[in-house]
Image (cartoon, rainbow, N blue to C red; front, top):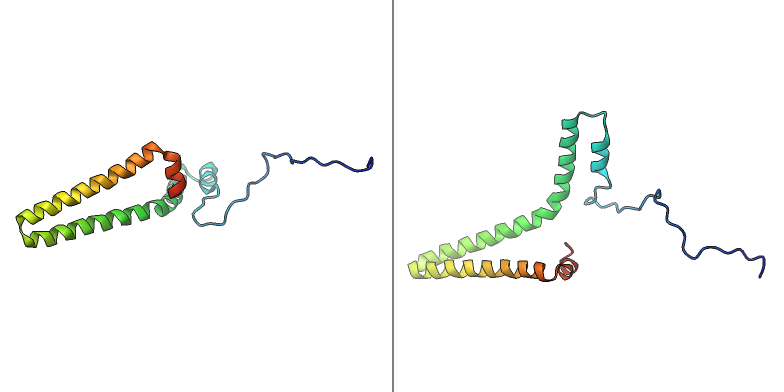
Length: 126
């Protein structure tokens, strides 16, 4: 019992240790910082390279939203085109209905984000 060496239950964390990163194509792994800290490359070239890295990362976030907006716009437009063939009153009703639904959906999204942002982020992984 006396010769037993004791080890700490929790090992001390060193700030120098490298944190393991994922090999995902969506992670930058400090690529922007490496580009911007390289003083051998001209300033404008560094800014251009850093902007391209950021745009590549932001594309994966923004592309789904852009596709959803485009689909929503095309569906609204096609509904109004078909309603226009029926008559003026039907076209007005379809236009008001589409606008009302879009405003309701946007208001629901914003109110959910404002009322409980933690729950929103946990549910939608934003």
